[in-house]
Amino acid sequence: MAVAFAAENTLGKLSKWLRILGFDTISDSGDHGLEFFRSAPPGRVLLTRTRSVKKQIRSDRLLFIQSNDYRQQLIEVIRNLEIRFEDVRPFTRCVDCNQIIECVEKRLIRGKVPDYVYDSHEEFQRCSRCGKVFWPGSHASRVMERIRQLFDSEQQTVDENVQ
Ligand SMILES: [Zn+2]
Image (cartoon, rainbow, N blue to C red; front, side, top):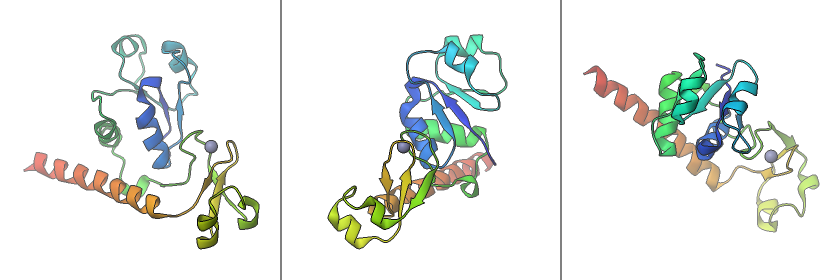
């Protein structure tokens, strides 16, 4: 499922997490509110938690986020769009600029990561926009665990509702 998002600036942490999951997510860089949503490329799911935006943007692609907590917000998005674990592509996108990250030759990132990281890893990826370098590490496995929990808890809640 190729779902993409446009999120207002109050949803920064949610936007980061959607990118960690691999979803194309653009954020309002300032406080443009309605203007941001009106100029967002068509086809994106619009994410807001501002009531005036909800009132004024009449779109079936607008998703009004209820929670103030990004973990709950993420669950709201997953539930509303029926996103499954199979739909996510973790660590394929830069969390800061939404760019797809690309594999990069090890020799090209010498000096751009700590020496111990350089010495202990063979595979690196880089964001072509901001230059941030990524590598599989303990942080990635912890994040992966949280992603699994996210879908596990979703499943449990659904089961509870059914019974
Ligand atoms: Zn980047």
